[in-house]
Image 1 (cartoon, rainbow, N blue to C red):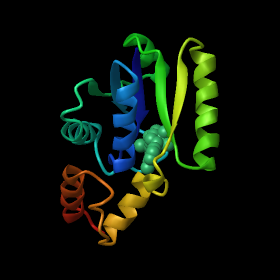
Image 2 (spheres, protein in one colour):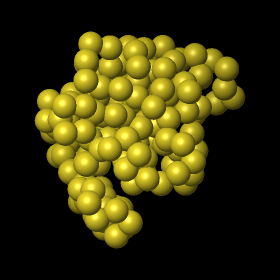
Image 3 (cartoon, rainbow, N blue to C red):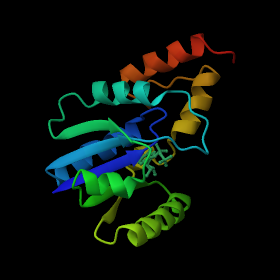
Length: 162
Ligand code: ADP
């Protein structure tokens, strides 16, 4: 069976990576899909996010990564013949948000299931937005993201007006 894991990944965190590893053990193939959440201000371009994901997922043989074309996630799922959409839940706010999206997707594509995985306890307080705040003010992010992301965030910050 094949699953897709769509997200903004701006940038990838250890919380996302933990979900990717766990989901890759549940399915024959996992396709991570880099989207653009238009309601959030992005630091990284889709291509930059793709490259970071590719580097961090090296060694996960059944995981591939692509950018979401200008299309609905369920249409992509159909196109690549994935039966499942993976999403993560850290808390009750995530639960409500994910429930709404899952219900919408179910209406659009009744044959595709959404599977929610609980965040590992270590990562329930970790979000890409919080991470960007910590990085912006010089906090230590090395425990929160893969090392390639630490470097990419430092590079962004050095070229950014803070
Ligand atoms: P989106 O803008 O699509 O919500 P995100 O990159 O913020 O994109 O999140 C993608 C998915 O990963 C969401 O389902 C989110 O709940 C989940 N997620 C985000 N951070 C974590 C984390 N620390 N642990 C587990 N899941 C997470």
